[in-house]
Length: 375
Image 1 (cartoon, rainbow, N blue to C red):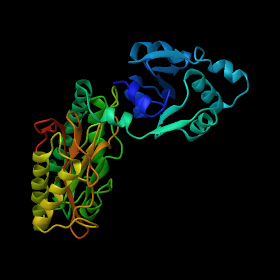
Image 2 (image 1 turned 90 degrees about the vertical axis):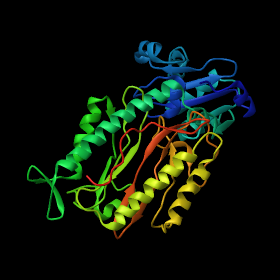
Image 3 (image 1 turned 30 degrees about the vertical axis):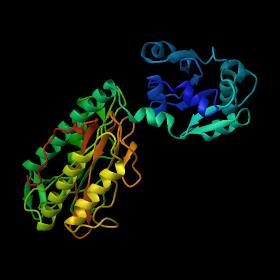
Image 4 (image 1 turned 45 degrees about the vertical axis):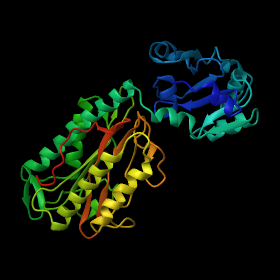
């Protein structure tokens, strides 16, 4: 979807400009082109957007980009470089030669380039236009997210089967007479993802007291009779879209406290998913979870429920909308996670995470993997 002329006009800008590569969501979203080397996207008022690429990337960009394509030479960059300007000055001079007046840029923008632009034209920072567009997913985007989610579920299933097939011994889990480690489980999961055309980093497989730290990635032997938190957020290589899911399991006999926490988390998640729909705020969904935990004696703060209920997902793992105390109104087409958790240093942590589509009628759960505590 394009940035509207009205949005440019409301900000007093003659053009929108973004800079980045395949890891820059604005570039991927607005251009449909993914490349390792940075490119520049420009959208002038009353004109379609275009990207400026090297000659080497021109033919591929013409095939893959969803916007118009221009070479650096056509944009005048080669001539400007020959005049002796440095890198950022050259880019700024090229951009201002192609835009009309003030330039609107995203929040994440190279400081050096922004500074060089500011020496030539007024620069306005966009804090909501593109993020607002990205928050409402098209059918194509939803399909990309769902594809990544199916890969995530297959990877989690691989992890859970490894844990299920292990044998408790001396407080740990053993597979083929060797300790089953966090690293072994992550490696098996990542191999599945590679086969499905996805990649993952910072995958969480953590057990014991460390599971009380929500983003502790885990290492070393996994423990029996202890919560094992598995949190994976793979990215589809072809599209750049992410999925996100979490399951907590125990091989053996969990402490009564863990069983009670797990049921409380599952109940809170169910209430949040039942409430979430277009027109409801993210803060209202979060409050339902806080209240659900409070009713059964669990606090929110340094221990207990320590984080937001969820977040939007797309070209970033965490993106708008927010499902937390500051969360605004949810819209049809948002894809969000619902991931309540409880964490106590004395016993460990429990988290369940599902991902779904917001509609006028409710939350359509994209996640299809079952929720079971005891293996």
